[in-house]
Image (tube, rainbow over all chains, first blue to last red; front, side, top):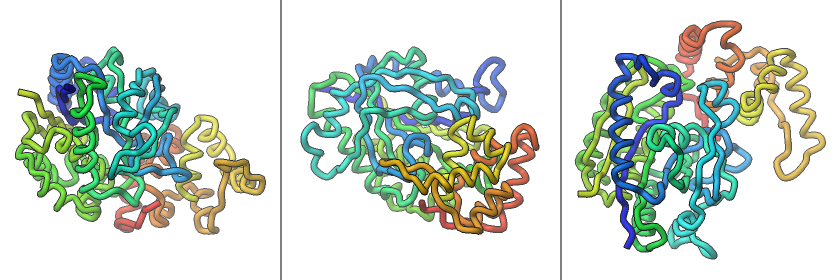
Length: 280
Length: 109
């Protein structure tokens, strides 16, 4: 039967791309080493494919069409957009996809019970997908199924739905032998603000939230996370904090158990999240 | 349609340059595109007089107060102000100062 060989959560802050190169700034040293650590763990887990849970930032998905959850099922995907090359210096990339695994998660002729996914045969990955892949699989040689979540354009799915998404991913992957070794990677933010009065403070806009978040992951406390992560609480922590919800999907995909790595790494952008649920 | 216009300006270098070069003409063209819509995703859109004035004036404080999505707004503003008018650090400070008094306008799309 199939295994989930590693579940992990990492940041995708695109401004890191120009900064994480020698000489690495002192405040970003731990961010770089945590990416190194998770890259090694992912390589050691030898995944056949990666299910990558992330949120498009109004690059491909805009107000003409805004799905709550969408699965990309392309054989190959292109990554980053011209405005992300301009703003962040990110490279244009091609990433292998895995339509067969995508259909396992999405359904083939019928959607799975309890989850009405949208899908795309032409996903065009933005920095939320590209940045984690550049750091975790620099050769971009592991097939990826992108799972898009709407954490940016309200109305948003509730925290409970992100947990249910994780449970669905877990049950689908473990219940099939389409791929033997699957990694689930999620990416998002802790307390974070952009385009608001609390952006670029040089520290977290809500350290209390970040500390709670770390504990939820370390304890595997899905219920406390769901109870706390209301729209208003997340907004109070910063207007991009909704992306934290992707880590609830990770925790649920790992079976709701305590993370083996739960770090909120301080740097100029606040705290960057590094979570992992390793298989023992 | 505020969010759509911000998206359409920022997404291409040519649009950013056209908006910076002649803001009124750019908005005129964007609004005129709605008169001959091409399905399934028509170009262009419409703005209220308040919204239009804010775009004409590059008035990010007003757009923020009107409920422009913060992520789109920041990237639009960064694209048009930096580097010619100010550094990104100067812009960030000016932006924070300007929007602070408006709290959290509803930016649900």
